[in-house]
Amino acid sequence: MVRRSVLFTPGDRPEMLRKAPGAGADVIVFDLEDAVAPARKDEAREAVRDVLADPEFDPDCEVCVRVNATLDAIEDDLEALFADGTELTIDSVMLPKADSAEDVDRLESVLEGHGVSLPVLALIESAAGVLTASEIAAHPATDAVAFGAEDLSADVGATVSEDRSELSCARQRVVLAAAAHDCTAIDTLVTDFQDEQRLREDARRSVRLGYDGKLAIHPVQVDPINEAFTPDESDLEWAERVLEAKREADAEGRGVFEVDGEMIDAPLIAQAERIVARAEAAER
Image 1: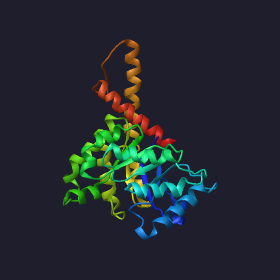
Image 2: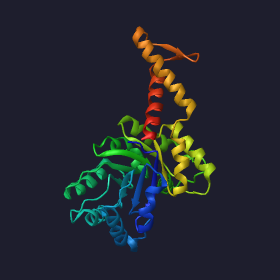
Image 3: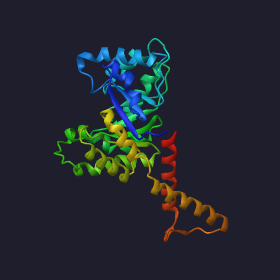
Image 4: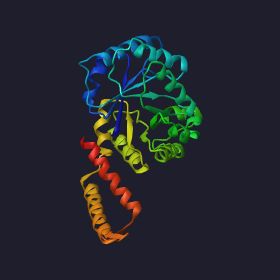
């Protein structure tokens, strides 16, 4: 499943919820947490449920709901969505402030209480979550882990510069946890949605770190993110040459071979396979 761009939409804005698929994101997240004021939680739950229950709502992207962080609020969120058994257009659930694998357990248990099983996108945005990222990613219900830099900065009291180098250790720890447990890795958002240059630079950094996608807070961020996580023509051509040369080497019983003056072995073959897989996923 391709998750280059993951776009949040406030749960209490039904007109925006219905328009969200048109932004072109691979994942749209109907947000019941940070984007909704406490006094409007019930209104947001009803709005999200109404859209997801509408037979005419048929997007061609993954539809996710971000629930709230506390167990009581999660129970209220899921009760509002699933209590009457209406079929909903929902593919996954995002868990904010995931501090441990036990948090994923609790969400999974509440879902099971409604007879529902959905992949979990765990948002790691605290010191505790970063330190237990591997355990969170290893949970069978966890299908993706996402890094949340803003909340982490507040949690540890960090003063963060524009390049967010102060958080580089945590950012890399999350992507390593995802890779170790075959999860999708989704990088943090850029809050200034009007600064396209900064977004493009940060998205390129996300790709270099090994992330599979990036969070978006506004529809205008979707296209730059999708472009960053889609291999360009030159990278794809190199990858295809490597894989073609590998097929020839395999037929001749050679383990190491040359492409464009470079000796190719297993790590570069894996890189080529990843580039081709990303390009194919982006076309679907």
